[in-house]
Length: 380
Image 1 (cartoon, one colour):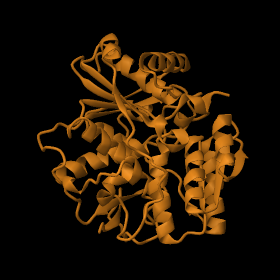
Image 2 (cartoon, one colour; image 1 turned 120 degrees about the horizontal axis):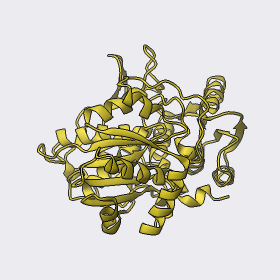
Image 3 (cartoon, helix red, strand yellow; image 1 turned 180 degrees about the vertical axis):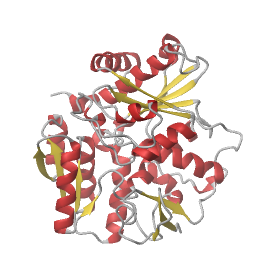
Image 4 (cartoon, one colour; image 1 turned 30 degrees about the vertical axis):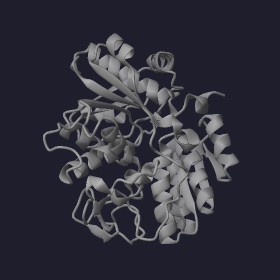
């Protein structure tokens, strides 16, 4: 039986794991899940989805996860592309093969599982595209009503997927921050569960399984660096959290170095890159965010402090790519791998190339790059 509590990521406030929690009531920062006892690695089961790690996830005895088979995505090594870039080894973790074609499936599976356990009446989320489609799918699987708020500029295929899965979709002017305001107002009015990024504590737990998987796929070791396209940053925060959990519980050796966590953003919306370069602990909201990589169009991430902390604790880095660089790198990644790369994955490749070129990443590095979605979701 897994038991846990909730701890504020910024102050000393705690809450019971059974609480229906949003952000910390004292300081407004995200909660993180803290397990009473993190299991041994032997607890990994033989099932083939992210819930094979259920002993290290927020699932109570007797509960069944709300699952569509998310996780266990392939991690392909690309030796020729690694040589062309000038690094020792390169793997691409292809999250576009998840249900609803993105990494968002992992977080929504965990969040909706807990929402069912908490007995909520409905679910609401703002989205740049992929999160809305994922919540629509998992809400349908749980037979819970879903409302989604999305900017009018969201890629049409993602909006159509959201509608096709039965969600009540509302388009708003502006960016995801404006959609977030509408979602929070609706949640307050109707009492529905707001699963906005980091406004509930469980999407991180689903996303952290990316880190567990890559460690297992590498034979329970970690790479030298992870390049992660960063919008809200839940996946980066979750992986950095679980690396510590796995090390403390003996899943990976104490002598295994932690990977450098590297944020990739678009030049038209790069609040984390700017804050990292300035040595700031928080990121100022980006004005007039613009990029065709819609998952990166997050001007004021709530998890800014946690993202920046992970970058600095890991000796990591942050860099941005132009729209043209993202387009070229997306095509290059697809041609070099057979992966139908999303522009966010292309951004990660463009940033990797820049860091090697600028000697900010050693040429002997072994790198895992995340492609967080599928290119088909962006083609009109």
